[in-house]
Length: 415
Image 1: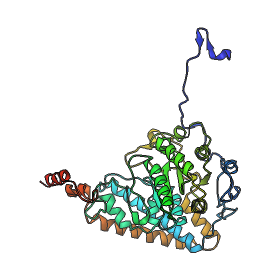
Image 2: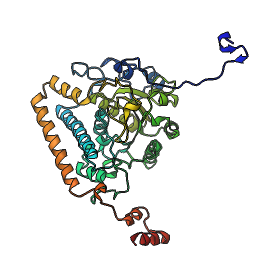
Image 3: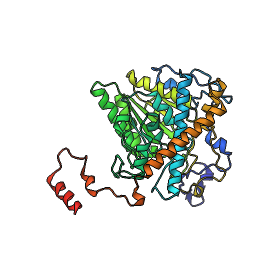
Image 4: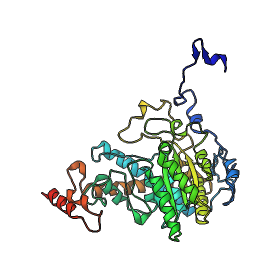
């Protein structure tokens, strides 16, 4: 025993390591651990052994370099038109978030959560998957719906909980649901969607289907036991599922270190279950698309699950109920990996498919569409303006035939 660890009376008292933000480090250094140059990381074969993929777990899949040029083996086969669609989708998500955040400040909605800085992750993955695939999202994947063509007006009706709310006021704002658009109902209990996604993927395989599942979780919620149970089942049964960890570096009030523990990266979690895992620049639309496509192809080829750690940053507050200044360093820097919208804009300019005038026109067009949609949704009222759904609707859409005791309770609610 080291003499320094022994007091005069006996062994030193035990102690715990309490993770804290590294306040002495620069903001860019704090959020770019294990950063790789664009194009450096090779693209593994779909059936590459997990042990060989593990050798790359501290690298980062990046496609766009500092000049906006796509480089390396991960460059996806996307046309300029598809890239412009991706740019429009991301700009729509950001404008949508900004309008609803303003609506909260105006007292028109009760709660909101934006995905500022994370737009590329959901928007690009949606385009890399196929109709019929099912996403099991958290509350920051509004880009999945917008990129899938789900009506933005319907999303606003749900946030306002007005008379046209498709969920009839039964869900919290931002907790959307659309089976037709491959968007499983969001759960307010964190991490439950992970085991649900693996179960859905297993069911798809058992019935001889071709659709895969995509599970979404934030790095903070990966500390929940459901996360580990999902990885165990996905690994054991080689379920056709993509396991996304959106590492935006902050849970509601704690840094990523609490969930990451002593592991170097969140990708390490996958290798502990013998699941191939990648770390990807989540602010690079092309890298997100390429990695999502690779993982989807593995699943469809019956090669099992893939875990992806998307490295990004929660630029805004956790929600409208949060004050990040109480726990986040004051030198917090916006977009340490670059604004995903600006980076795709720069790439399109670099290849001669975009310019600042067209970008300004698209921005004005998107803002006008979002504003018009909100005005239309707002004209139907909201729960904040006194609209309350008929309490009897809480009994709808649960049972094929409502049991007698619930029929009685529904009649009591009417009175």
